[in-house]
Length: 232
Image (cartoon, rainbow, N blue to C red; front, top):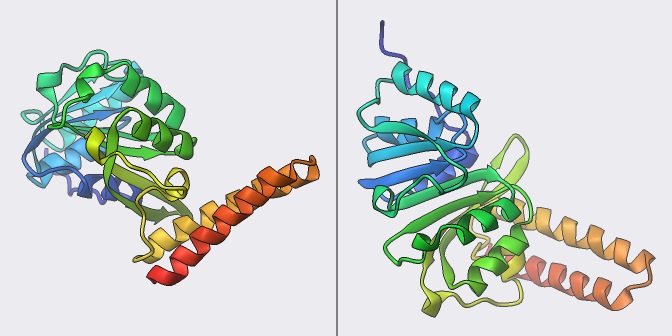
């Protein structure tokens, strides 16, 4: 069987890949087809990787892809509900991408070994992002790096996180844009998305008579817009 040419990661997973530390052991939670760990292994960027999923079906697809790209010696699969079947010694970088923020919160809550400054979480939430950021700060997890990527017209944010209570400070904009700056067009696209969401929510609050809450959200949207203009 000939060697299959390596696929190209989409912008969302490429962003997560850029946050993995070269040479570390990695676990990809909710791996689906194992594209991320396979790509990292083929690039020589991980010492080993676990592709984990709660569902047997995606793991079968992952196993087929691992064989197809001949990375069996570097990438293994694991049936796991979150991190329940992953041991601390097996992973230094833990990727949780493409799932809701509330689910991520539960996974992190259930894995006390993540409260270790040597570990890194790479998180790419699809929903409930403000709640996730507030949870992280409240539990002593600091966002070391955050960046956005646009894929198929939609802006996503990914963050590299460390347990470091002394660094886990926040400001009024943190729940909404985290540590993003306005230096890239993708970051600005994410900020514009957040502004639109805040304005829509404020409109709904105003209609229901909750004027003060609506005004607070509008002020936050204006602050994000000013930050975006200032940092361009």
